[in-house]
Image (cartoon, rainbow over all chains, first blue to last red; front, side, top):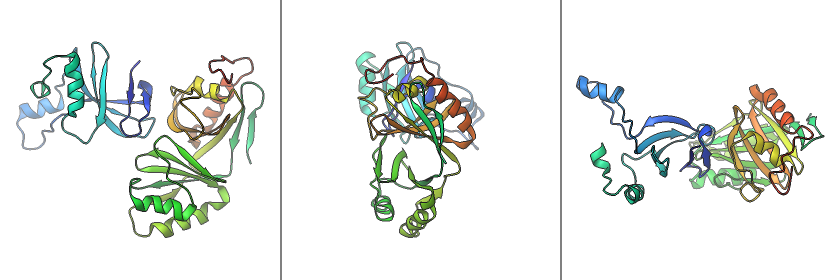
Length: 109
Length: 186
């Protein structure tokens, strides 16, 4: 069972109180972009067996969208953070690096 | 008037009719928002996951931009007028949602266990104490639940699912269905 702490209200929310929103930190490619870029934005998603950044909504709680970093292999949750950022906070990256030495967020983007 | 749904079993469960509910939305962090609550209704601004009461009035934290004000039903028009008078032309909205929501009250030492059976929230006495206010899921529908004082819980849900929630609560409180998970009740 997945439990994520909502960074907005602080509640330890059960998976069943949340709505999944897919991969986080996508760059939108809209009108005027190349076909390849638009296809990538619309359809192509990471599906890693390891560190993953996700969007979640505290649907049965305060209603806010937030970001979560977790490991899909160990199910370890590295942390949750505001949806109003374009990259994970440094403390979360540091926590990932503690179990995944050499983890490089930029390289994965 | 309030209707008694269940007296035997784990808890006394009743619908609470005639309670007024007002949704107040705005920037909770702003001094203006706090002033509107304090000056219009003499209520403090509760922190996240908490509620506060002043006599028959109460206020619960719903979201970073929303609180739910509980007042006696007959006070709603006056409370709304007082709120709007204090809000003026600031970006805060007050809406009467009394008829949109149904309210329940659960009392008794087993009330905690009735709720714990139906929700993923940790209802352990140390984690869910008087003054806690939490929006969550009760079986299949969203609700907000709070503890006003020891062994007294309040709950609101959308009126459209009130019958469903009433059935859930009465079933979970059925005589002989106690699990005894919490030391103090059940």
